[in-house]
Length: 86
Image: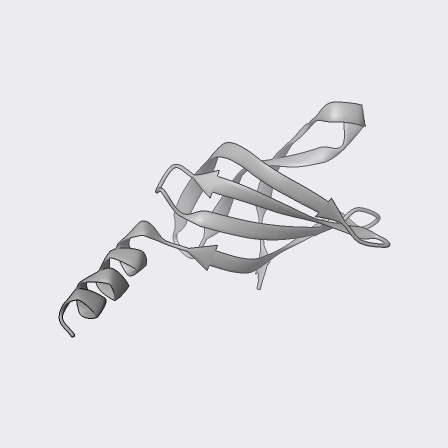
């Protein structure tokens, strides 16, 4: 899913996410947890101000961003609640 991302220049001048639009809401990045590299892109795992974990993919040459995975605190609570009910 392509997303709009607010960025800043991080270590070694690499573009890093500061916040992004997810539907109608804005998520601020509160922590960069990890990043790993591909041939012409990077994956960046971040924590949002909503408590969710997100993996963003940036194509460094074109500066296009995609959301590849997210896990929300609220969704995790629902799963745990259902698990306890068994």
